[in-house]
Image (cartoon, rainbow, N blue to C red; front, side, top):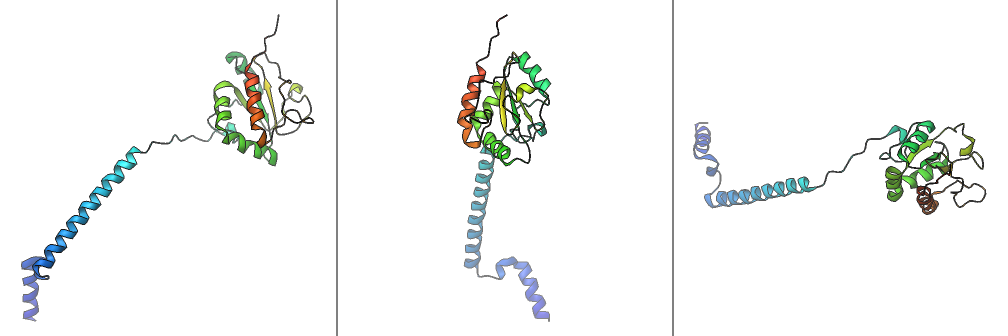
Length: 196
């Protein structure tokens, strides 16, 4: 018993070096030092890489957008849209859709994914998307169906002359029609000038 106690005290007195022969212990310390250096270097590189990553702009979901583009400044009512179109001299885009309509959902997904359309909608138009029909019969020149997109000039004229590619539903667009929609958005920017 006394021998084991003495051996324990001897180990404590000599430190861990008493357990190993000195060359083995020194080799262990060198490896541990090299590992610590690599760990510190990797941590430093990781911190620098994390700091260099650009912060992505987080966009809060906009309930008025109904999924058509959260960065677009949507108006809440048709009347508000007409008023802003007159004041800003920007055309109004009216999107008629239904939440349960698969064609509306497909168009919405394509509309949101198209950066050019999103940018133009945000910067150059007053935007409204309607689930319910308005009382304005001019917004249904060829009937009530969804999805349907119409343009209203700041002179408050519905641009019935700007149509999609379908003969039976002139204002309908499908996901593959975004090129036509983009072209029509450019046409709508050319404002009508009513003579007095």
